[in-house]
Image (cartoon, rainbow, N blue to C red; front, side, top):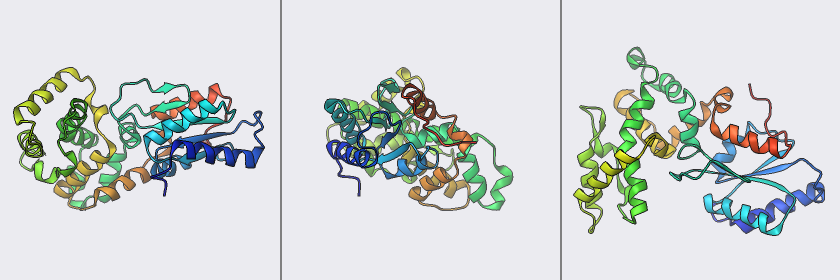
Length: 284
């Protein structure tokens, strides 16, 4: 429904809604939070103060950025703030009316600042697996599985290499003996997907990224975490869920006090303070 909406259409939608409510009265302390899509809207809806905040789902990052640009160009007095995924970008998290996630995307951010991974596993794994469960181990396991995959995806895009990451199956790369992704299989499969890039080039690129990247956990996407987590649930938890369902389980398992600990909450709060807007509902 929202996938094709443009930045100009978003700002027009916001303006129509605002004029309909307040006749463009600049004194009204009301704002519009523009997010990349409906999933982000659903997650944030239960936390914002609906009396003064309206969440507007866009059609991806570019639509949010273009919406903010259009708002600035028009010189509108309406309060608009955009929230976008970092996607491996190192740009500062708060710039004017734009907030970026501290981690790769919003899902990765809430998982990094919560116990959701543990909570979902305990509630859904086979009963026989609970006794061997180690609190906190899942986050390390998932990130370890995705380290090479995530670094190569971002670095290869930067290099202009088309390695067709979407064709990869983590299941086919998983080594059940060591409980991790097989690095040689990963590099080999990526090389098979390209007629121009050789395995040695991919390995050299990965080694360089490992040496130069500080906190590589920020390069792991929430979507990939869900895929790796679904694999671990099946291989070690004795239950099978599709990654798409796992993503929904993650969001449903987030507790309000955990959301408060995320950089997104802090950055949006700072923007709200600067603009004198009572942004959040009571979050316990």
